[in-house]
Length: 114
Image: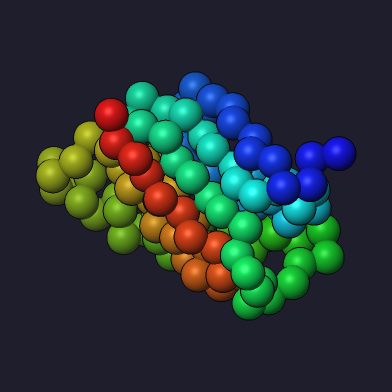
């Protein structure tokens, strides 16, 4: 029923698209998933060809979790030096993780800023 549709929803935590968003894009064959945040609207579009497959939501979420610690460590250094606040650190870390996930599977995540 959702085949080829655009799914729009909000992310009140202002996070980028999540592993669940990418999972839903694939599982329901959506054309696009949009996530509205205070920074603007994120867009994830269905690629013509997926670079890699994933068998479950849990598998995709685990790929996300595997990236958290290495990226978090890098970002926290900037926070401890006072270069960014904790909200910026969270935003930056989540963006970096999701960009890597997107490259792995062949989707493009874009942010149209307000």
